[in-house]
Amino acid sequence: MHVPDGFLDATTSAGTAVLAAGTVAVALRGARAELDERTAPLAGLTAAFVFAVQMMNFPVGAGTSGHLMGGALAAALVGPWTAVLSVTCVLVVQALLFADGGLTALGTNVVLIGAVTVAVGYLCTRLATALAPRSRAALLAGSGIGAFLSVPVAALAFVGLFAVGGAVDVPLGAMAATMTGVHLLIGLGEAAITVAVLGAVLAVRPDLVHAARRLRGTATLADRPATAVGGAR
Amino acid sequence: MGAGHGGALGAAYVAADTPAHRLPAHLKLLAVLAFAVVVVATPVHAGWAPAAYGGYLVLVLAAAAVARVRPGRLVRGLVVEIPFVVFALLLPVVARGPRVEVGGLSLSESGLAAAGGLLAKATLAVLAATVLAATTEPRALVRGLERLRLPSALTQILMFMIRYVDVVGGELRRMRVARESRGFRGRGPGALRVLAATAGALFVRSYERGERVHLAMLARGYTGRVPTGPGAAVAPREWLAALSLPVAAAAVLAAGMLVG
Image 1 (cartoon, rainbow over the protein chains, first blue to last red):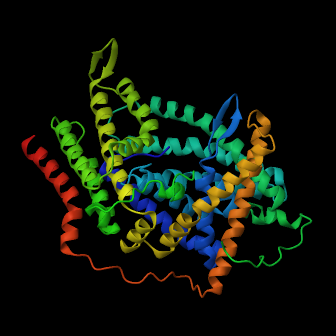
Image 2 (cartoon, helix red, strand yellow):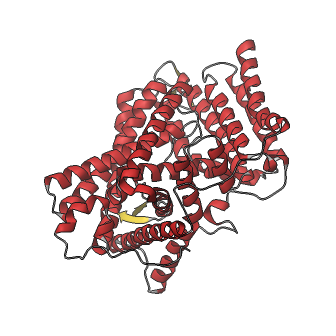
Image 3 (cartoon, rainbow over the protein chains, first blue to last red):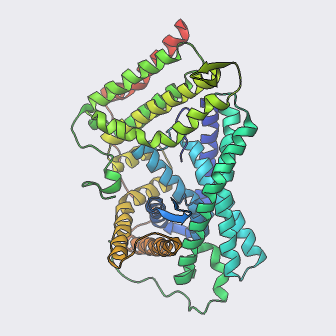
């Protein structure tokens, strides 16, 4: 769910655009530390993965299905900076090619969906791995809690922006309560999908999961062999 | 996915040869962005705002006509707005201020004006962006962003994403065919586990593909930059054509402020 043009006034949109540009600049620097000069191909492919996985429908119980937003999942899989870049690129493509999310609201969407969800997801995962560094269950629980919280926190951030730059005088308490209620439910779905997908990747390739770098010591896997030779298709 | 020749992303593009298609992508990006800024800057509560929205609508429909974007395509572009239409419809119910009775419901006047304004602005901007997507190929858009001085690291990521999104999507489609030919039905709690394994495998394959692409690029002399060469010079006539949309919109806005 992306913010379209016109929901926030021009000043607020400009403010979030500056904030988004700063975040992306820091992320570009940070991603170089995570991926060195492999940033462009790997972040590009991660963005393509996030884009494709957002189109999948997952059954999340009680006869409902949901789709992933993916900020928290990407943060756990590839690290926070690369995740911010990947989600930002997904948002740019959605805004430019599908008019999904306004052009003047692109900064708002990058801040809300790119930065806030990734930050909440990463912080929760990081906290869990700091408390129990060698536990796979703690990693999954942390990323699940992060994914669950990331959705209502992003919604609350939107309410905050709407309070500053929205054109209507709405009772903020009621709006915040409604938005949080709805997004807590969406967050449950996000958490279920995030934990399931992360668990699936951890089962086959724990070495690829950025948040699981500390787990590697206990795994009975050999170090990763040199990447297979083969032409890119 | 896989709609038409261009795949998931190319589906937005409508091939044709019109003045709008021929304009350089970075000019079109600037024009649509400036148009959206003018639309957003229109005060919602002004009495002349509806007239201004009408003026913008005429302008964006004229641009669509020049670009020969069919009405059906424009309407399909509007589908993305639906979640926020729900949000906007709630505003008159919850907003404060003087209230009016409409069909037995007590609605807020300022909420009604704001909801109408939000919907009008969002719709106008979506229409303009739809015309942009219909007249510009995804790769040209990224080139346009590059010419607008976006950091090259970011445009490279975008370029890779656009190049490989169809490959990744195709991988997902093949996994679905494989799943369903083994009798998978996709219901119940067990399905989440299966679909999560699919998404997990998709991530592993995407990431490994990224590593292979990187090695292949190194073998071809990649140094961290993708040479694109200088962009073609832009004729003043093209600037004029591209900027006619936002300038006309700004004229509508200025007229509203002066008269209203």
